[in-house]
Image (cartoon, rainbow, N blue to C red; front, side, top):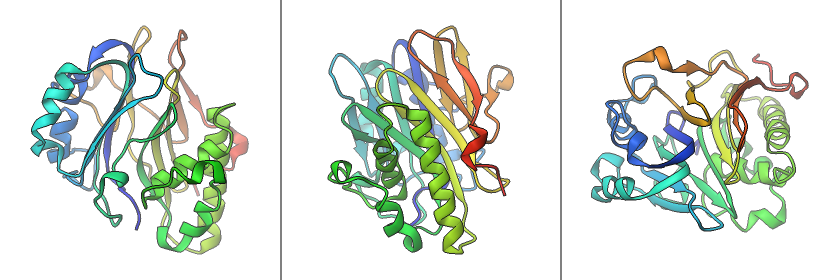
Length: 268
């Protein structure tokens, strides 16, 4: 039950805009990518989709559906009318985990949102060891079966409240060790976005030479981070190098930073 190894996603933080600006309107929008992804071994991402967004409420709004994004008549209406300064959108291509709403991204806990493109080794082989990383206070939120949700809750349990980057890096280091010790040749591939409703963090990591694609574009305090560009003009898109992260904190310039060198995350 390895979760979606070749999903596509969008994360945005900046001025308040309708979701349609990036989810449905561009020439290579996320809906188009659900049918014809260009930088993925799975060109079709039709195993469900999800939206997560923030407004005046304390926690995020969430809409997840098991139908393909291209066939849900509600999606375009929602994206036209929902306005947000911070939102996630994700289309899924599962490689094993069941197609259910609890397994669709993004995942929410309290004010946190998380979504993921990748895999965590041989999931059936290491599932119990990874789930053991989730503290009891977070395990009650474990309602799906994916590796992605388990990793999200493990990150929260690693004290993301205090330092989201350190919690993510520590969790990735532990996962890398667990996968290595299991003897599998399946990799850790982690291209993911995490937010607490204020700051946005995106990570590109793999424990092998190949990692899933990630790009970003920023203008002032506005940033959009994507699995692949939303149009054919690549001049405005910057590729995130492997073992790097994009950080968009409230009121601060967007930064591209290397993952900490002491995290034991170098590709093998």
